[in-house]
Image 1 (cartoon, each protein chain N blue to C red):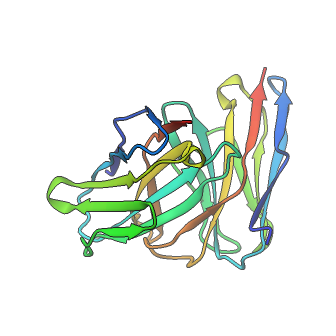
Image 2 (image 1 turned 90 degrees about the vertical axis):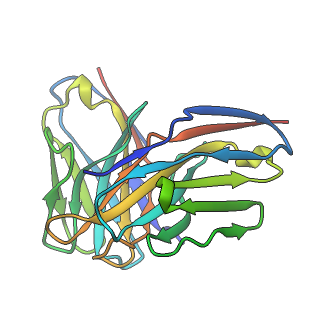
Length: 115
Length: 117
């Protein structure tokens, strides 16, 4: 079972370049999330999509945009990358859509460096 | 606002020792869920356990056990007879509903556990 698949696994960008991180899940989950993981800060939510066709800002949305392309796919775009966006990015999906009890399932992450 | 504190940033133990990872949380919500996730060197976070705020029973799963105490707002995780494969970063997380009625999860900063052979 693939679960949550993220591409690419690694990426190096120059300041000002743009790129899109792709995420797809095959578990028929309603909700999907993008987090960033930085040393000493745990995981912070960038954007989430509670269901197909909806997206909402999380804790740290500045500098990012998202698209919920369909139920399976949720992409994260950096329009003009900055060194402060150097991080490990995780996509996740949750089994129950709504509810505080939902377990989130994570992809393997994308390591992004912005020079 | 929600907060999760994992005061131990790194722990090293010798194989077969027991180790406890601490987690203290803050929330004004009366209904919430607590989670533990494991992040092995491969990178992806793996779900370990979920506990709701009304269920204070401790849980044991093999070498893993969890102690939930509402009185101290703690949800600690103990690994008995640790093994090298337990080496990972462990995250504690708190889940409530946000103002829009959707899940809001707050993660701790993680505890890196190294088990030395």
